[in-house]
Image (cartoon, rainbow, N blue to C red; front, side, top):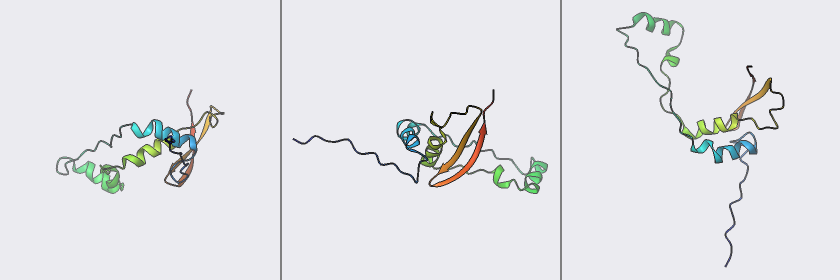
Length: 113
């Protein structure tokens, strides 16, 4: 009788920053609930000045965010946002990379006291 072997985990470099982030996704982030943005609806007749300011400032999209999200992309984002112990050597400034589906952006997060 042949023993069943555990599936080999292959690192997916297009979805995750490092293997640590992929493992975090598998062990934790994938099981977390995703809560969408809370939307609001302003009545144009009741709040004309607010609606005018939204239009003047180009905030229409901000005032009406998307209500549907990709649960998988949100979970991948949070898994990739995590910093491993090796990466967190400098506690004052941690380099953060925003990484979603093979797209990477650099940013810097300064921690408070």
